[in-house]
Image (cartoon, rainbow, N blue to C red; front, side, top):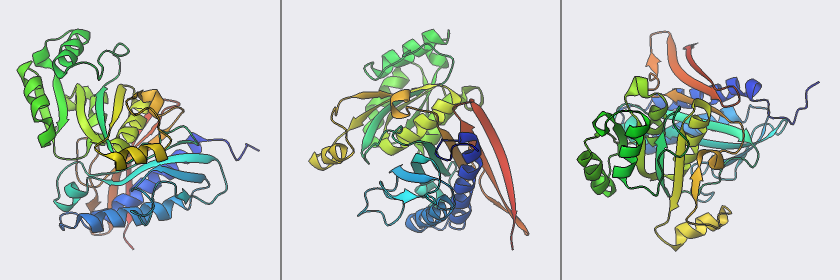
Amino acid sequence: MADAQEFHDRMLSLGLARVSEAAAHASARLIGRGDEKAADQAAVNAMRDQLNLLDIKGTVVIGEGERDEAPMLYIGEEVGTGNGPEVDIALDPLEGTTLTAKDMPNALTVIAMAPRGTLLHAPDVYMDKLAVGPGLPKNVVSLEMSPTERVVELAKAKKCKPTDITVCVLERPRHADMVAEIRATGAAIRLITDGDVAGVIHCAESELTGIDMYMGSGGAPEGVLAASALKCMGGQIWGRLLFRNDDERGRAAKAGITDLNRVYARDEMVRADVIFAATGVTNGSIVQGVKREPHFIQTETILMRSKTGSVRRMIYRNPIR
């Protein structure tokens, strides 16, 4: 009989897909209803219920916030039946609450799982992120480079011109100078309103998405989730935590982070094999959103394992009872 405490990623992966599917089903009822909090809470409740059916000793290391801020799926919460391997869980029950409330593209439910102690316990602060897809020289670009240098170096590595490069950037006022500098190189920019996990994943499928690089600041928890996806799909990502005040620096200390200026590469954010699942809530460029028909509800999930590099796209049709 196999050791019950071993991280059997193959056996757990389908269960993880069920978790993200359940969250998508629950939040889909609130698409276009204008209530971000209700959509997020529905996803949280469904995700937690499904996680507690899995034979794991799970600890949420990337969650909905600190315990006093989040009633469920808070950082440090224990989930699962308690029978099985000890695992770290990173999740965003609804990546794109605004996208869901406004019925805009690319809202996802996202979750990753790895052996205990192998996912970066990123505090809920901002992270400066830079990501590229697979098949490129190691450290082809870096956070130390200017946006111009990144575009030029990536174009050299891809044997193309800067005008052939497309960069994905989160549309925020703080990125205005960076956007202007990127455009000055001749590169194109794909602006996204929310959902930077999807933005980073786009780099790994540049043939389909046309996106070569992601850069800019966004949530640190989403950085760890994006690193989990890239560990499965290939590609490189770097992140540096950004702190605006002493409260945020205190959160880092609580998470065990002592070097506040450290740059984390992909394999430092995700230090072991990981499984990753994302289910579409609204239609998007990665997966299709939830579809309701008279007698069934249908979702599309992307399910990945870093151990094998496998990427599955699954259609789940569930009869409405």
